[in-house]
Image 1 (cartoon, protein in one colour):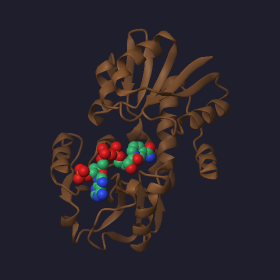
Image 2 (cartoon, helix red, strand yellow):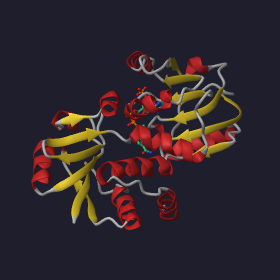
Image 3 (cartoon, helix red, strand yellow):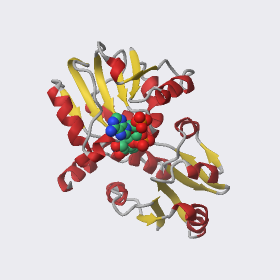
Amino acid sequence: MDRYAVIGHPVAHSKSPLIHAAFARQTGQSLSYEAIDVAPDALEASLAALAAQGFRGLNVTLPHKVEVMRLCETVSDRARRAGAVNTLLRTDNGWSGDNTDGEGCLRDLQRLGFGLRGRRVLVLGAGGAVRGILEPLLREQPAELVVSNRSPAKPEALAEEFRAIGPIRPCTHRALKGDRFDLIVHATSAGHDGSFPRLPGQLLAAGGQCYDLSYGHAFAPFRAWAESQGAAQVSDGLGMLVEQAAASFERWRGLRPDTAPVIAQLRETA
Ligand SMILES: NC(=O)c1ccc[n+]([C@@H]2O[C@H](COP(=O)([O-])OP(=O)(O)OC[C@H]3O[C@@H](n4cnc5c(N)ncnc54)[C@H](OP(=O)(O)O)[C@@H]3O)[C@@H](O)[C@H]2O)c1
């Protein structure tokens, strides 16, 4: 039986074992998938040990997503641009690193009917997750892509780094006053402590949609804000979690699982 795992610290809360077990059942693949706690100072030794034990692939979560890059034999272009790796594939030459977060986010937006092409899109936040989703969002050719953060330096740096892929207007939340957007993607971590960034009013155009990368209790503040702004549709990022896992699974097994029943199963058990 081929072995896979997610490594992180902590990792016990991870939904990845549940998701990959569902994918394996659905596609009839014979594999095992476990969660392995790897302390930051044990990353290099653990990767060597897992390779020696025959692990074929790994998902990588916090706090290892950046550090693991230097331990990869090869890193995909999209992972390099994202500045982080969330998927490792074992090859004859070593670990090959990839990042499926951006693909997962775009697929979830498409699944929900949250189109980007020709629309005015606002991304709130400028951290690691935003770095991972900017390339696929830009490739959809929105009419405008604004990245807004409470402090200006990070969006300005992202606009510069991604300039070759497409234009990004960097902004602070306060300077958004007077703008209108068709789609607002919330990607700050504020929801984890129950808060939400202070924003000017009336940012959402009539019929506008709102999407949060967070899910579970961290989704509540954005959901409340989006509903107060009259959003036509609001979604959390649970689907992104499953879609990025599906992209990893496809990388490892060459098969794309059906994500809809797995998202439904997670919602039932949440
Ligand atoms: N669904 C999925 O599969 C998935 C995948 C990845 C991430 N996520 C979620 O995406 C979110 C962002 O993750 P990340 O990795 O990008 O985190 P990160 O690198 O730590 O970045 C955090 C971002 O949030 C901003 N922020 C934090 N607290 C804030 C507050 N109180 N008010 C306003 N802005 C605040 C930070 O602004 P400053 O620069 O001003 O500090 C920064 O832009 C998290 O909720 C994470 O759980 C979901």
